[in-house]
Length: 76
Image (cartoon, rainbow, N blue to C red; front, side, top):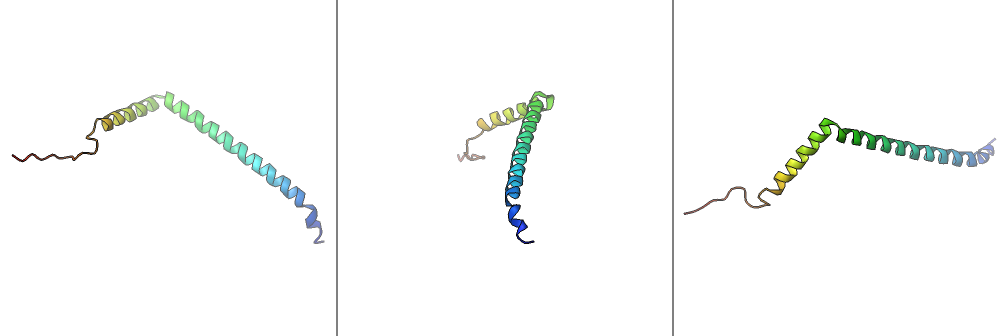
């Protein structure tokens, strides 16, 4: 009876390959769905507001003190 396990080797490899392909297909579908959700969010009012807020923060950051001291003391 122990010899029957040798005959299943090809089937196991085929099943592994089918599972690998199914997994890759599931990942691709998930990535496509995530991309679609991202595009829908960017087109929504909330997405536009988030983008405007990020742009304002980037603009403020660009106009910051560029790493200089926050407080400047004048002696005199």
